Amino acid sequence: MSDTLQMNFIFVINITNVSTYKKLAGDTVIYGMSSIIGRFLNWWLVPYYSFIFAPETYGVVTNLYAMVAFLLVLLAYGMETSYFRYASRSENKETVYSTSIISLFITSVTFVLLAGIFRHEIANAIQYPNHPEYIVWFAVILGIDVFSNIPFARLRLKNKPLRFAFIKIINISFNIGFNIFFLTICPRLIEHNPESIIKHIYSPEIGVGYVFISNLLTSVITLVMLFPEIFQANFRFDIKLLRQMLSYGFPILIVGLAGMVNQNIDKIIMPYLIPDAQNPMHQVGIYGANYKLAVIMNMFIQAFRYAFEPFFFSRANTKDDSVVYATVMKYFVIAGLLIFLGMILYIDFVKIIIDEQYHEGLKVVPLVLMANLFFGIYFALSLWYKLTDKTRYGAYIAVTGAIITLILNFLLIPVLGYTGSAIAGFVCFLVMMVISYFYGQKYYPIPYNLKRIGTYFIAAAVIYILSSLFSNQAAYIKIPVNTILLAGFVYTIFYLEKAELKSMFKFSKNK
Image (cartoon, rainbow, N blue to C red; front, side, top):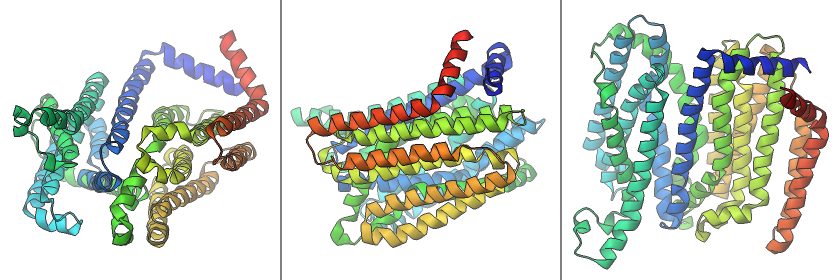
């Protein structure tokens, strides 16, 4: 048995037999599953919307929620992480909790009031002059969701993962339920009985606005469910403590905003960069729906992030930690490339999830999938600055990525439309990945098997190119061809990794 496998076995035994580690592992699964299941269930609203709304209408949803993502980071101003840091180290945890929740309450209420007062001006500025009500709805949603961050953080700090997961799942269930009620059930009831009582709560003129109303109602329900945690606060406010927490949280805010630029800025600026004659909201809708098709890659990366971070911190400074990290990276890349090829080679099956009018945007799916894989690799590489306490480099890299994203979007969107956005994301995460690798090798060298990883990337690229040669063939030709190509990739993996895989299989059987 190799040293790496021996260490892995010891690590598994420790988690299995030591009650503290068992609880940590169990809590991580609950938190992770609630997040992943939630994202997966929410994702199904995308194909649902695609069969209800025209692309230009769905573009409104994509555009506004991209803005919301930015404001969520800005209005939270790193307070959740600051709360974790100070509550876990302070002797007076209740004062930390109260100070955090009061601070967010004041800023959230101020934001809602200002948004309400200037709703017409804001609506004009973001090109929705006929819908100032959107501004009010989203302001309330943002205020509630940001304020709720700290009660949710308290549940995590107090080791109440089941209640945390329960509220999250209820939140998502209500959101989906309200969407179906307003967008499908109500129209059909009105159609069959125009004088139904439903006419008092439903108006066809609101249309896509019911997506936002559903979110608003869900946020209110979530807030009510968090009342027990909210009213546990002693409502003491420590201004000195707040200054310390704000100082600690500011770099986190910068990193968060940079991350939002990398992931969402394209959906915000696209309507301003595409000429009206080319129907910018139509393009935003097409791009938004196809961008969401990468959910499988996103879920894989999300699951990996939940598992990997506690894993590498628990192994820090062990004898063979660098070898283990290198092995993890190799199999992460293999899994990511399998997801990439699985979706691209069988895109004819994947595309039936969304309505045909969105299929013109399928050309960006390979770019979006690979960009997300690069981001996942970047996250795995980022362990170097976390283990060496050089977290400022994480901010530098994120800001660099944001600058690249902005420049490329402004250059490419006017020329290529939403395809330019996909290219910008691809280049951004590729550069971030490469920068992190080289700095990581300088400060925390890890013997990544670049030759083997490069081989798999090249093989995947060749398979993708070969598959594209058959893209215009009938399904009964290209599906078997693509299946053979995928089988060839799997065989290549097994052939190159068979010794390691066999030793792992033998190890698992013996134990």
